[in-house]
Length: 111
Image (cartoon, rainbow, N blue to C red; front, top):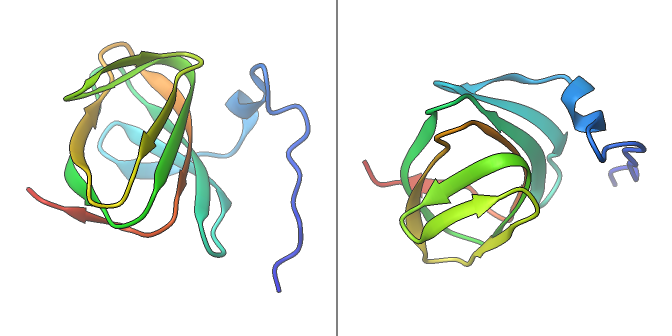
């Protein structure tokens, strides 16, 4: 059984000092939890994107800094986005952003 974790001082900007690693072109990841639903921080460079994908489980995104966009709109800091299983989108950030993301299951890339 995994041990409980706590991340004191994550807000307002404590996440900026967390260890990030490459995830995809222009996007870095800091994995916070990988047992069951995954939880991570994603940091997008200005102009970075993630190609179109379908969710096989609930994805929850909290925008911490900057803004993230998809085909439904632009989400600034403080926005909470819920993408249920079966939904599909591509994601990009014109100005760069950092998000807290939780996903139940891996996504299926469509392109």
